[in-house]
Image 1 (cartoon, rainbow, N blue to C red):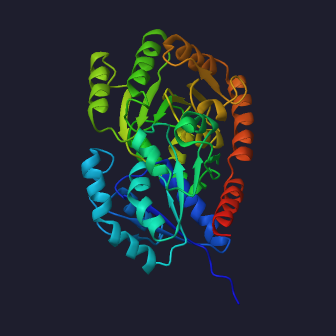
Image 2 (tube, helix red, strand yellow; image 1 turned 180 degrees about the vertical axis):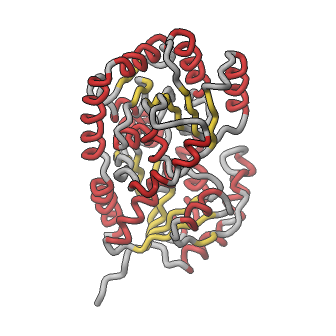
Length: 376
């Protein structure tokens, strides 16, 4: 008798696209090739749905849920979870799901009860270090917890016990040349050429990602460096932090050289255009963009904090600078710009390290074992 394919549900809200979404798509590609039966579900229309459609990736609309009420007040959260319990349980039965693999806090909470009450296996993928006391309670329903870095595991250890394993995110090789060509026109329309020196930032505009500090770096270098540089900031520039970034750019009169370019996808072609990527984020569980830059042969200068330390070996595959050290970041950037041979050696070692340590093949091997252990 032919063995049933393991059916895995990856539920998402659907309105945004981040590292967890990209990692999941890369994992799903491997799962389909190896005989698994993955299913993506979304609770609302949005950027992730648009991305899935553009790639021809099938997905299913999950029951409509007020996801904004989750992880706010305890009362509204419990109401949402209990109100949707039956609907989500039926969804699991209808799609013959074996494992529910959640990737963000709201999905952890929403799908925990229906998954366990429906006697499905629950895999909790912890991608941040921000864990509340009540999230710890929900985590007790997980059959398995995995984290994206040793740093992340260490930070949640006392709150979730010793039930978690580290599985690094998968990063595929850089996009082919046809994708690179697709941004050439947009790149030129922004006034750039292949000779432009671009110091880049890629992240959403949140306090954790520290975009205001990047503007301070731009200001310091602009005042003390006589060659023309462009500071290009790519990411979802919404909210109070983004407004603060815009005010700081105006305050320093940097509007001509510090440019907010908005969201871009795919990101690899833009990374390939950067001369240097700067990642000043704090409390980062992993740092997917660092690895993507390394694979694209773009040198990385990042804060010496969190998951960054597991990706970069300072002075060999990138530079790690003390968080908040403005002089340190500026000196590291200028040193690379003025020493192209050193930069070339660094990116060569970085590309080799990233390709070996964060490959999609290695990620699949780790996840394959976890899925089979859960269903054996």
